[in-house]
Image (cartoon, rainbow, N blue to C red; front, side):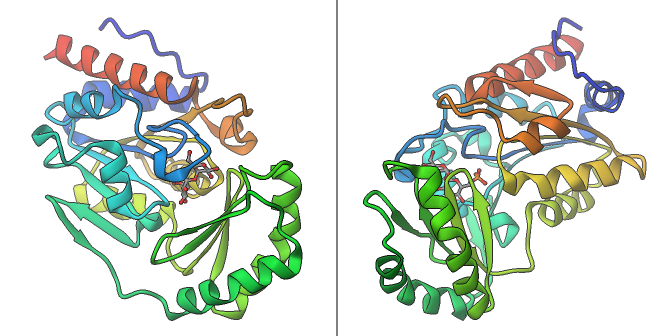
Length: 282
Ligand SMILES: O=P(O)(O)OC[C@H]1O[C@H](O[C@H]2O[C@H](CO)[C@@H](O)[C@H](O)[C@H]2O)[C@H](O)[C@@H](O)[C@@H]1O
C-alpha cells in the first residue's frame, strides 16, 4: 500500500490496518497546539504548519470524519489553522474548549459562559501581583476560560510552579478546575474533557476506527478514551507529536502513544502518507 508508518504496538498496528481497510468508518482527530501548529512564545501567533490545512483537506474525501479537538476556543483554531479559507474543509468539525464548543459547517455552538470565569479573571491581576509573578507571565483571555502562561518568563518552570497551587485554589473558589499544559495553567469550567468530546463524536459518527494525535497533558483524556474503547472493539491508533521547540515530548503522551512523530512537520507528513496510501488503494 506504499505507506511507511510503523506503530510500535500491536494495538496501534491494528488501528492503522483498520483505518486503511475501512476508511469510511474512520475518525481522524487531531489536537491543535503542538500538533498542527508549532509551539511559539505568543499564543496569538501559533499559526498551523503551512502544510496542515492542505493535508487535512486531502483526507476529508477519503475518510469518514476529520476533526480538530482543542483546548482553544474553536474559532481561534479555525483562524490560526486557516480552515475557513478552504472549501474542501467544509465538513471539518472543530471541538473547542475541550469539547464545550463545536464549530461545524461554519457555525459555532457553545453553552452559556460559566460565571466563575469572569469572577476568577477579575481577581487574577491582584493575585499575580501578590504572588510576585515574574515579568513575562501572561494572561490569555479565552472568554470561556482564562489561561496564565509562563513561557515568556526568564525561568518559565519556576514561574509555573510558583503559580500552580494558588491558581488551583482560585479556580476551586469559583467552581472551576485547573488544566495544566505546556507552561500554561488554565482556569476553566469542569465537566468536559477531550476524552468525553472524542467519545461523543465517535458515537455520533458510528466510527469503527480512530486515529488521535496529541502532544500535551490535555490530550491524555482522549488517549484514555481510545485505550478504553479499544477494549470494546474499536480500533485505534494513538500518535504523539513531539518534541517541539527543543522541549522534550510530554512524557505521559510519549509513553502511551503507538507512534511518535517529530512535531507538526511530522504530523503533516503522517497525514500526507495516509492520504497517499488511501488514494492508491481506491
Ligand atoms: O489543546 P491544544 O490545541 O493543544 O491547546 C492547548 C493550549 O495551547 C496553547 O498554549 C500552548 O501553545 C502556545 C502557542 O504555541 C504556547 O505559547 C503555550 O506555551 C502552550 O501552552 C493556547 O494558548 C492555550 O489556550 C491552549 O489551551
